[in-house]
Length: 123
Length: 271
Image (cartoon, rainbow over all chains, first blue to last red; front, top):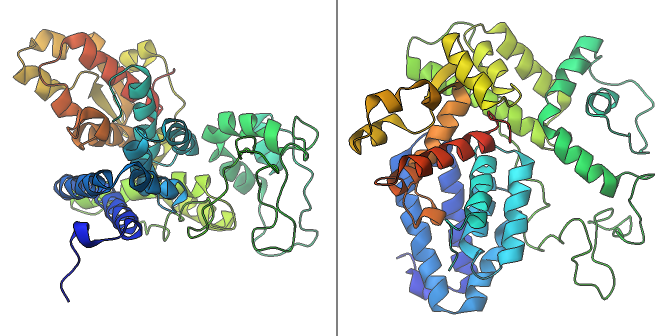
């Protein structure tokens, strides 16, 4: 059976897809596979674009992933939702940073710095 | 628990503990070895102590828990009529599991003899440290302390692994200390360029500046690799570019600021 295109997926399916990609990113990072990570980053961006095309509530659906049992999924969900849920996303980033789970903790800490110094302008 | 609390200056919560001896007998060395694994969590533990420890600032009326007997019994819940913001922990969404992340996976196998392939040896060193740090972060019902101790003991016994593991748990140092240490290179540590050297060379910065004393620091090898990995990965806050790509064409001070911030966040440089 042909897999669904992103446009054919429900919001819930898109959130699940985002999480799947995040889990694969986690493995790519642990395996030092940057080429794989780059591919997965593009895929995640495509999911984000599809959610954006459906409005703010669709984007907010990603906030469900703040407590997903994989740190890379939590991190990505927080980064991709800073623009629509700034306070909750920041709390999620702070929690990841403070949990000290490598390497996502360092990444979350840098994201918070970049929010504070204006490098990261959420959209 | 006592050993960890003593090391970190915490008051022990009033929790029921086992009254019968079961499982592995721990000696003092085992206890101290395990307690040490949690040192980096001290700041977080002290900030949470005020919320979670009876006898401190924790007030059950302000931070109610779900009733015992339910599947989520004991977990914090929003106050009635409140927005949930007063709870120290946000309610967990129904269809994701508890707030704990997945555990660190199976304990890594550590051969007595260093693999001939440098790549294989480095992969094991990295897996050991990541496993130990992640195991220390999750609850003890996810990973039993005895399992963690066994991995730590195996890492200590493997002389080709231990310097890399031990160095990872170094406390953050001042920049001056890290720069001075460059004169004393040793196993488990690498010389790190605060401003990445190859991109700086490509952008025409002089070698005297790139390799100058002020740009060099001796850091734990495995933290060095984590930091380098972060520089290489595409990142949302840099518009999808990697930090390395983002810094192309930027001035020395901007590169240095990012480099130093990275060292702070990875835990090698004091805040």
